[in-house]
Length: 470
Image (cartoon, rainbow, N blue to C red; front, side, top):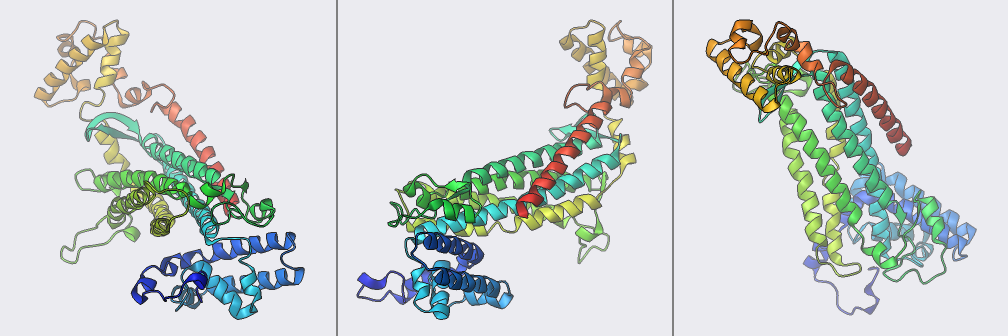
């Protein structure tokens, strides 16, 4: 039996009937559909549409449907149901099988338009919690590695060319900052979506005097939605979630790219954990960075989902349109993200840095040239002039095949009388790092404070994620 067949005389084209069904993907929303249906049942009972006995029967049957679904066979039964159009139809058919006509009574005062809007909000809210929990674990792994690295140094890069020395901890904390921004974006999305569409009807609002705050409270929403037309046609939260995930994917991809580079023999900064690497079927010596390479690729899937929803929503008139059915699959297609981040967290914790190699690299390639120019600035030389003098000194050192701090004082003085014996300690590795003594800089004491602050922020994020999932 169709949920809408009363005014139709002809049956659906068989191929179209199968083609337009959404149960093949929205079966994933069964637990959200059950939760929303229970909240609606409680609302109907408060409006005296259901008796207390009917309410108890409906709630019990809905709980049983959810319990059946939790097994693999149960999921398969939903996904491959022979006649259900969508997850809402499946639940109604199952209720009728178990409760008879009482199962039909539950749809009083509601529409599938508000049901799917509610189910999707519940699903996205749950996914945000899972992603945030995994992000917190990754951030914690980065903070732990930063603690372990201590004051070990590495080169930093611009244009993939060595630029200035930084602490390894400073580099790791850059990714922590990205993660915390990602978590903030997801939290903003969760706050904006946390309104309950139930009671909005098909477009104009329920035709019964329902207390909409009941369903909102039952489902842990902050309040009912303010406009029925907007509530049934809003998919901003799906797009916002996917866009926020795109940022997550981009940050994962940047980290993956750096680790992939740093693990090459040419860099030799990082030892890949064997538990997250594979070998070659042809070359016995190989250890391949499969995890980081896959992560680089998967951001394409995430962004593709966001682009798909953008185009699906473009130009849609109010309110609900069947086009919106297509916004569900992109949301489901990124359900791999929490697991992917959790894998990255464990991978990060297992990384081993070749700190001696990184330390040596931080002392070669004239990475102290900026500190040298700053030395001249402190001697009263205008920066542009100082830049020119040090550039000439670097060129001279290159021709000799030595570093700046190996040049003699006499050699340096051919580029300026300002050079004195105090030049050499100011271009040592520690001094070069410590001269970046500003908030957010890589000076050693600044990084110590930044690490303490980051550890506290990540601990807060971990607690918030655990609380949200409780």
